[in-house]
Image 1 (cartoon, helix red, strand yellow):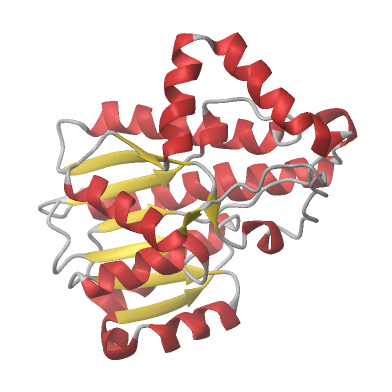
Image 2 (tube, helix red, strand yellow; image 1 turned 90 degrees about the vertical axis):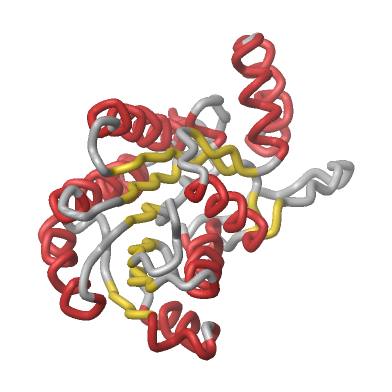
Length: 266
């Protein structure tokens, strides 16, 4: 897809990858409707885009609210003129505990935002996208969406659901004007833990420091994938490596991740 001149909707746009995606899209000549649940994050985003502010509209929204999401396309069209693409980037993680210890409220919150929020956005915008000469749906899964991570089992289940939803969409839409990609980020330096209301796990004193991929680099990888109409977009060497390892030997890969997480779960 040629990004320049297109109107993109980005969820979770107030921080992390969503913020960097928005800034990069604006710098590439796109218009962006930035969606986030936090008004202060959107205000911070607005201050960060400089001369591109006139091409940005901001929209405060809880994507797990189906009725509110249904009203969003017309609101954006009123401000931006049309809609060419959506990037469903918003998501949260769960508390770092085993499924047996995870409260039902946390399970429902993760599924409502990560899966249902993505589904609501897709359903709301797809009729409008089908009317465009060229359009795009990008859904963000996770490395945890194809590889089980102890302590993030429900998060992983929500992202696995996003993976299959997106790949089904690709199959259903491949003979239309709507392109579809699924994104699998590995470890990216964002504030998702804080935004999820989750306490970061205590790292063992002898643990090796792991350097996460900067969010702006992650955004560049995603946009390059969109420009190339990639079916799957793997973000980070860890995501690429674990995808290959899991395909070659799922049990070994699962045990490897379980070993890495054991010290964090007790």
